[in-house]
Image (cartoon, rainbow, N blue to C red; front, side, top):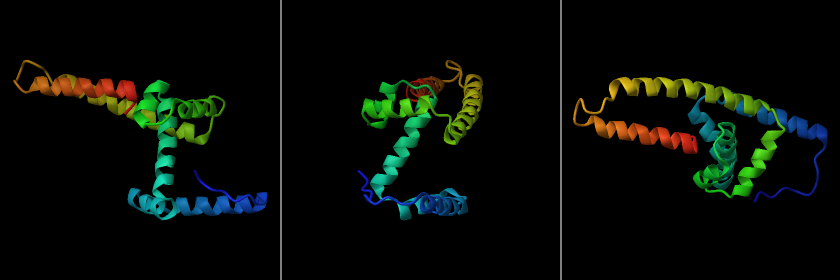
Amino acid sequence: MVNISNRQLSEELLNKINKLFFEIFKKFETNHSFSTLMNDFFTPKERILFAKRITIIYLLIKKIEQRNIADFMKVSTSTVCKYSLLLENKNSEMVEIIKSIIKKEKTFDFIDDLLADFLIRPGLKIGHWDLYWQHKRKKERKQIYGM
């Protein structure tokens, strides 16, 4: 649990802090520099909490069942329900970004399946059955858990 001071900040000061936070995040363009920023600012527990929140929202937008999300992410179903309710009435910028990522992912998955259908033909060569079942399990796991 994150501790926050009882003393409230003024609205003007909060806006300045948010602008500063945005400017700092905007400067980091590569994955490595972003990881460095996250490691500098957040504790390991906060990083995990932050990553789990984003992943839960991502999986909810992908229409993965809530119980599967809870099992996969090792969180309670009430946590998943909380984010589900938050998303129900909210159409934020983050949701739009995640939807665009999902669109790109669907295109990539379609191409991956198409190539797998052409290249993995069980029965032609001895080892292809292993590849076929491996691809099929990967597809099923993506359907159930979204990842």
